[in-house]
Amino acid sequence: MNITLTPEQQQWLEAEVAAGHFPSIEEAVRVAVADLKAISTEDLSWAKPYVDRALESVARGEVITLEEHKARMEARLASLKD
Image (cartoon, rainbow, N blue to C red):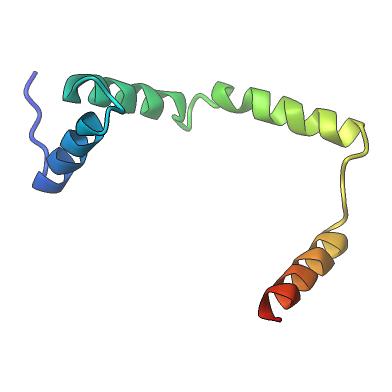
């Protein structure tokens, strides 16, 4: 199979390989395709561990209200302005 990439895409892939993130451009493309398959909107099974962890946190009472969250964020922003 031959695939035509834009110059920017090819440069990015070459840089990723040069940085040691992938052993080859072919492997980088294989990983990209596998990642796209994993996040397909038709198959959200990849999200199940994240949802399970969130539900466990809720069951333990590790939650705050929206109002508490907003107050924390306002306080944090105010501290950054000082």
